[in-house]
Structures are given as C-alpha cells and as structure tokens.
Image 1 (cartoon, rainbow, N blue to C red):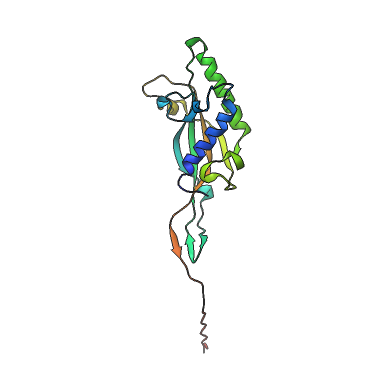
Image 2 (spheres, rainbow, N blue to C red):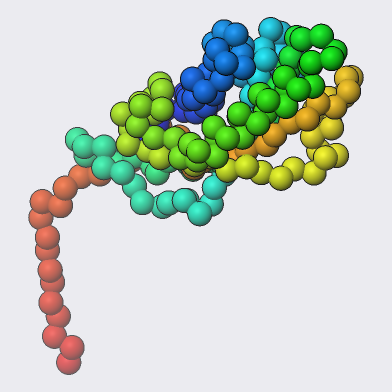
Length: 189
C-alpha cells in the first residue's frame, strides 16, 4: 500500500526498467525514455502515456486497517493502470521505421520478461513495500489508439495493463477498547 504518489511511482518504476534495458544499445541516453503523451514527446525515443485508471474490484476490501492508538483506517483502493507505449526515432526516413521496431521489440521483450515488478525495481513510495505489481500486454482496438493521435499520423503503439496498485485511504475512524461488559439476565416466565 502507498500514498497518493503511487501512480507516479509505478510509471517511474516502469521507466527505470525500460531505461536499464534500452540504454545505450537502442536509445542513446536515459532521458530518452519517459512519461509523456505520444504527441507531446519532446526528445523522447520511448514514451509511456497513462491513458486509463480503473478500480480493480477483485481486490476491493471492506476490512479496516489497525492504525494503532485507537484508530482504524479505511481500506485502500485497488487500481489498474493502462499505458500506451510509443517509440519515436529521430533518425532519417530510411532508418526511422527499423529503429522504432527495434525499440518496440525490446520493450515487449523487457516487459514480458519482467511481468511482475517487485523489490528493487520499485521506486518512491513502492520501494521496500513488498508489493508485486503485474504488467500484462493488452489488446486495444485500433480505433481507440488512433484517437490518441488526432492531429498526426498514427504510430504503432503498445498497450499494457499494470496493477493492482493500492492507494491508501486517509479516512480514519476512532475506536475504543471494551473496558466493561454488563450482562443482564431475565427469567422468562
């Protein structure tokens, strides 16, 4: 479980994993992989764009968490995050396509081989949490993906579902320990 920063921390964990796999063989520098919309990529060679957040009802809980000191914390919300991954090459027109295909191929391989982020792969509020976050390739209809490129030609992109990710609740409820119990018995007669 983690703070509200967990969504950004998941994105940066995936970026870190991809930087380790792609730099320097396919992408010259670590800043070539980052979080951005494919149309706002700047100098990125590989952009990850969070396009959807959905509650994962399989992990919905109604169990309060003991916060100590007479407080119970409401359960966290479980989320699945959906990313669009797009390669961008600055090469000339003759080699641009092959560069982007190689970047996407290595991305697929890396995310498949690391289908569960855990331990040292997690950063920020996730570091040391003991959580395991799964990464799964998603099939998204072409019409949906094309809508991410309204003013430019469509670029081949990948879609991944990542989760569950837990965001802690800040709501608490005060409780007190039972210190006295009274039982009154009545004769039924």
